[in-house]
Length: 336
Image (cartoon, rainbow, N blue to C red; front, side):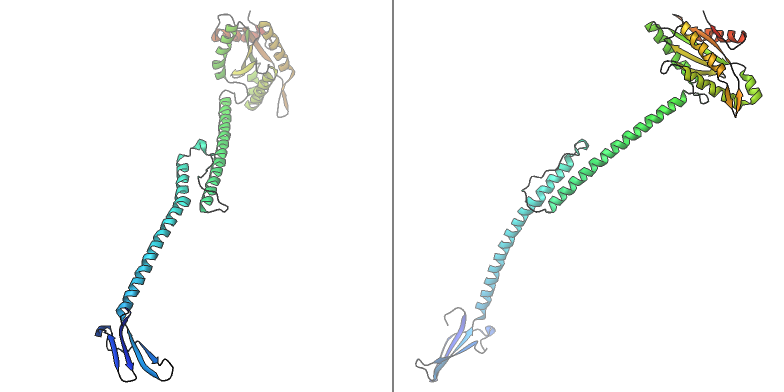
């Protein structure tokens, strides 16, 4: 009965004696039947000499259950805390730190450094985890962005080239006579002063030729303005075809009158060029709707003087042109 787990013990001897020790309160089951009953056999065998009855102390059982529960709970609590610390350490090492490195890399990444590789400071592993997949995806995104930027650069360069081409075409159209393909009068006003200044600065000759189609009004009156336009187009093409490429240039001055500018040409060279043009114009009649339209042209030639400006130079050449007209047309007149 002195054992803590035993609340009460009773021995019933075969002689009728009763030995009892310990006590249980009524609320602990003092009137309850014994928990265990054991027969006491004689040492040499035979008939039992008595019976042992035991009552378990429930409070001790409750204390043991509580103590064991607290011990187990404390053990599991410590284990859980250690496990959480290990998991937190592993998450920080394998997840938080790599993600922070990726975030810093993305924040510091500049457009000109788009090709800089993402390298994480972490232990190598034989297998791919989620961070490796994120890193691979980021590198793939970098590659696609780099390719997209390269494509954009190519598109920008292509659009820039197209725009420059369009600007060049617009400029060409703005200085070109739509009917004949020669320069228009705007070019004479912008370019001829530069040509005269260049010739004067370097002491080089410069000559101009006024060319005018003879009896052009008769062509319009006889065959109509469409035929006149065809004659003008053909005349402009002929002049362009007879000039030195990238040196001489021709512009439509107005109506059927054209101005030919001959850099690096003195009066004799210009006269020779005018005569050659006059002959070619007479040799090649214009064609329109199967009709042959004969034509001739008159030419006035002048060389730029040392102190002569645009207006004076053009006035002298124009005077020579009208002199050629008055002298019977189809001729070249040169200003002395």
